[in-house]
Length: 67
Image 1 (cartoon, one colour):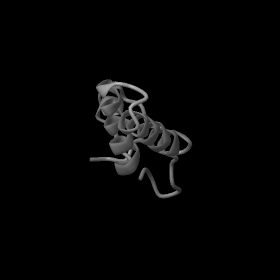
Image 2 (image 1 turned 135 degrees about the vertical axis):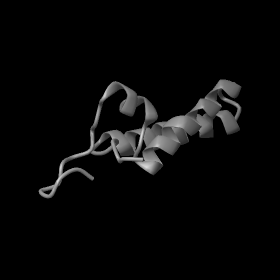
Image 3 (image 1 turned 45 degrees about the vertical axis):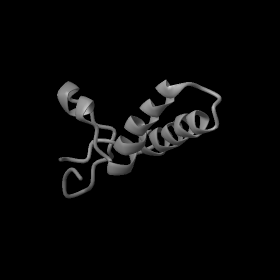
C-alpha cells in the first residue's frame, strides 16, 4: 500500500486513537471507543484505505516523487 497519511494528520490520528482506547479502558466511554483502533492503525501504518478510494493524500512530496 502507498503511504497517503502524513504531516500533522498522522500524529493527530495516533493521539486520537490512543485517547479513545484509553477512555474505553478506563470506563469513561462505552465499547464504541474501540473504534479508536482505526485511526491508531492508519496513523501508525501511514496509509488510509478511505483516502485511497477518495483520492486524498496528506503525505508531503519528496524531490524524487511520492513516498
